[in-house]
Amino acid sequence: MGGTLIGVGMVLAGSCPGTVFVQMGSGLTNSFITCLGAICGVLFYYTFLSARLTKDEVPKSSIVLKQLPELIGIKLIYLNLMFGSIFIGTAFVLKHYVPYKNDLITPKGLRSLVGWSPVLCGIGIGSLQLFFMMLYKKSLGISTGFTVLVAQLCCMRFFKNLIPSLEPFTYGVQNSLALLFVLGAVGGSFISTVSANQFPLNEQCGAGFWSSFFGGFLLSLGARCAGGYTSGVCA
Image (cartoon, rainbow, N blue to C red; front, side, top):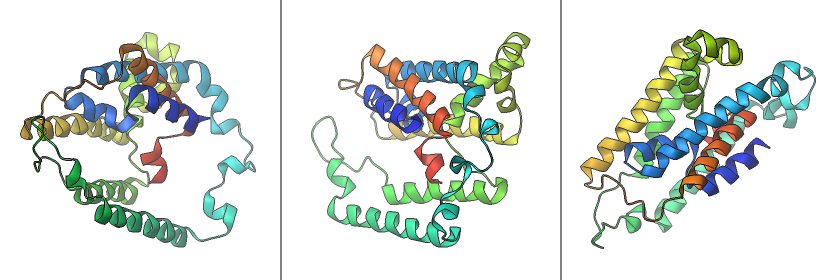
C-alpha cells in the first residue's frame, strides 16, 4: 500500500521524497508546494494512522516483521553481495551504453559539462549510508526528514498533546542529523545549480499546483506507511 501511494505521488508531483529538497535548492517553484503537501501527509499519518499501523500491534510471529534472509534462508552477507553485484553491474552497463553526458544540454542547445558524474555521486551517497550504518546501526532515509521537520512542532505543548506519536522525532542525534541532511540537500543543490548557471531551473514542464500538493501528500503518506522511501528501504 505504501509503495503504491509513493508511486502515484511521484507521477503527480514529478518528484520523490529525496528530490523534493533538491528541487527546492534549485529554485523550482512547484517543489515548495510539493513540500507543503508532504508535510500535510506526515501530519495526517501521525494523527490518524500511526496508532493503527504501528508494528507494536503486530504479532511477533507475523511475516511482516521478518527480514528477507529469514524468509529465504540465505545469510545477509550473501544476499547483500548478490543484490550489490546486480545493481553495480547494471549501473556500469547503463553508463557504457547510455552515457549521462548525452543529456547535458544547455538552454541554448549546446552540449556542456554541467552535470556531475553519476558514479561519483552514487559512491558519495553509498559512503554516507555506510557511515550511518556502521556508526548508528541505521540507514539515513530522506523521507524521515519530513517527519523530523514536522516533529519540531512538538516543542509547542499544544502540538505535543495533539500528536504525541511525533515526539520521538523531536530530539536526539539521529533526528538532528536528518535535519542536517535535509539542509545539506537543499544547500548542495543550490550550489550545484548556481555553479552551472542554471538557477532557477526552468519549470516549463513542472507539475501544477494541485498535482504538486497532492503528489507530495501521497509521497510522504506512502513513505510513512511503508516505513521509508526506496533510498532508505534499499539501504
